[in-house]
Image (cartoon, rainbow, N blue to C red; front, top):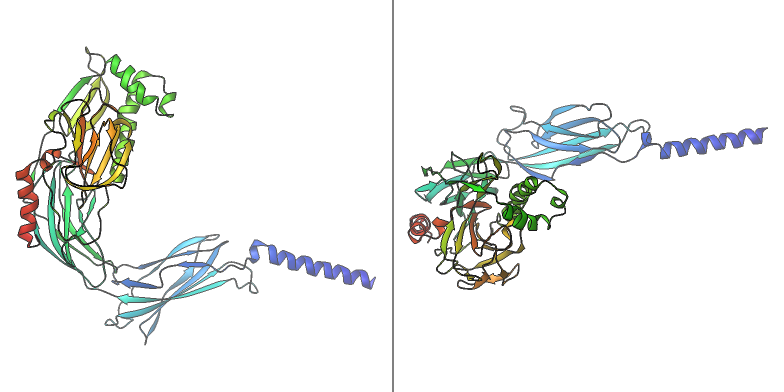
Length: 447
């Protein structure tokens, strides 16, 4: 009997130990504290700390020290069964030395595990804080006098801070990166006014690692512009020809049976996807210091006649009596035509960042000319270079064709500033480039 009881107790002990060892209630992983070991802080906004646990968080403490004084910033618990949370450490005004440039923050987090004799697991992390309340310096040096709706402009400025993090031009709907130019602390940025936006305002924004911000307004003279509106009949030959050809290249569209829905898919859904790809490929700005940047007027097609304008709003209809719209799109480049399979020339050097088929744009090379300026060449018959190739001014890029959504042999020429389609006419105009680019560099004294 004693032997039986001994075995039973042993089994209960082993079973209980196994239960404790394997049970989620007794998990042994300490909570995770997600924050850098060293941070910069302007003391205005709370420090945000992300915490996680395998099962459930229980409590926390945040303790700050200036080396002489220690202050409990906050403590408390978490909602039941919370596996993640965000802690906020606010600066304790009056409790620490206001002149202290370095602080330490101790973060203690416990979970709801029954491990450690029901006390749970505990994580402790101490981070170093560099206190930085000084805003960066920013000075506008020069900028294009004006900017046209749908057009481009240049701004040059100085920015400095010991802990500089980012510099850009903010127009509200987009942030344009600035390129380091000529020497340390000098920046140049091309900006664009999207043609569908009626209002425009641009500010230089400079941030440091402590999230101090300085800004300077750029006083552009604004030129509003009305773009053409076209009503185009979608013929049977167009829908059953080019549209059907593009539909056959898409598994998604191939299941659409309605002719107008197929047309809308190509003219709208496919177009948007193609334009998003263009934006992705043409948004970058090299952050290496540029020693010099200049551009010549683009002239991609010899004796090319313009057959379609930039910014054209195109309403498509099928029934000529009602002219009821069946689809809408915008033409964000210019179309040039000369002869079949005409050579397309790179007026300015650059790097090929895309050289493939792009849906409605057909065979389409895209070139990075530096400073966030890009050009694209749509509907090509043959692309003569591959992605990554470096082009010199005067090199032949491709030949014209009618690939993609094109009914005749021509070139769709587009110019982009950091992914925004802009008026090609400006970048084809010698006088515009002199006034808005060359003179701005000279006025800033960094030419």
